[in-house]
Amino acid sequence: MRLTGLSHHAASIQGGRAAAAPAAASGATAVIAYNDLVALGLEAGLLELGKRCPADISIVGIDDIDLAGAVTPALTTVRMPIERSGALAVDLLLQAMNGTAIDDVVTLGSQLIVRASTAPPLDDSR
View 1 (tube, rainbow, N blue to C red):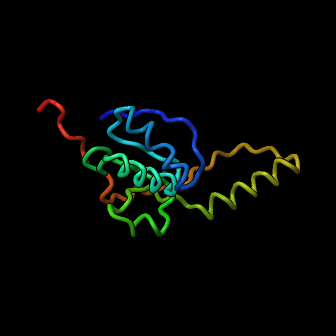
View 2: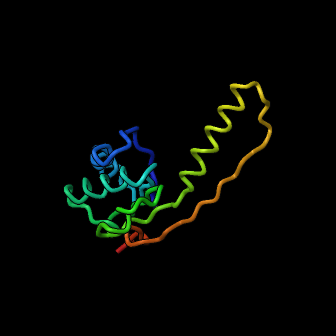
């Protein structure tokens, strides 16, 4: 498996499409996008470049939006507690603004939702 870092792109389907060419050129066999919209745009952009998901490149998103399970191939994603993390961020910000020391480390759970956009890389030695 070969992973590579890509430059920053907008957190949108169009941002994912913009990331497709650099991802394809990198030779990566897998890409982890920072949200599902970017992953879905990346999947569409790679298809336009003749790359098949997951045969040529696996794609993983983060969020588990409803659309992730409705596309073909369905998107493997990491389910995050979005509402909880947003509420926690506001609480911590308010505490900091009030001068309250924040000493606790908060760990939020996540869950990998495996769908059809990921597969082991094909053996290149054939």
